Image (cartoon, rainbow, N blue to C red):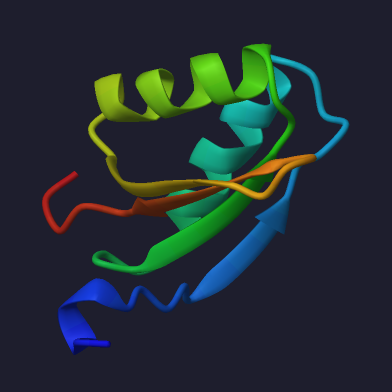
Length: 84
């Protein structure tokens, strides 16, 4: 495995069971506390959360790097941009 394909999150946020739009708000607030360039792993429920949160983060200027289907939840890797 090359280094470029391995993404190691700096922090993890479990938002399973958290409804929209609270999960987006909590993710955004957490990212704002992180240093620029940091990578956050967020666990989201299937359905509305995984459909809404990545798009909302992208529109807010964050970079969604990876979405992984972990069968009963989704793992979202999002990076805080250097210029936000």
